[in-house]
Length: 248
Image 1: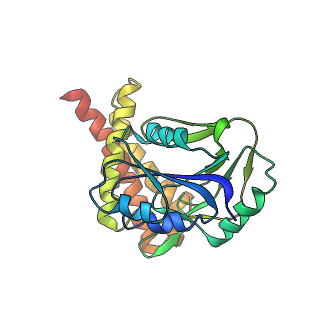
Image 2: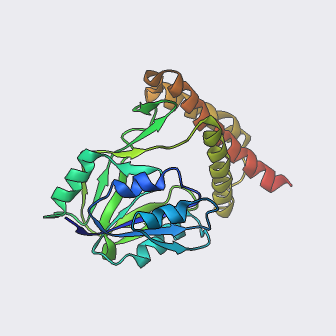
């Protein structure tokens, strides 16, 4: 049975993931994909799965997701990234609660798959995400990174998980860290934050100890160690790029 729900997804070259993402929400009355001029088969695959595909130059994560929200027509919106999908248990839970919703939006845990395993420590889990909400009571907020949706009124919490296939491999993780560290440095510059050598040195160190020890990343084995180092690397790059922008 279809529900009064729009599934909205922003994409760029997501042919590997987009079909599984769409198929994990079989109850959506509307599927909207906002694509940033993909050069692979993302658009064709999405259309084949019943999506309405709109082409929009990338505006930044927050603005792009707000654009996608704006073209949705159903009362409820479920916003997913292309590399995410609903677990079968979460499909059933959403179908059940939308029959008699008690809140204006819902957050749900997200579990990420990386380096051959589901990662449940190191700050990666439960990683609650607000992704289901009444369209007219929600808007996307935040800066160039860490965008999030703000819902007017009450929020509920769902029990079951979004499944997130976060990186295809280590090279993809490094490339993503490079991209997001650039966005983070730009955001610091916009806030008129000055470079600090102490932050360049100690923030990456602190992030590694936070992820690997305090948040129990070591329980994820070698993958947990690599992830903790990756988080430290991302911070190191962000403050290095801030220094570069202010010095040259």
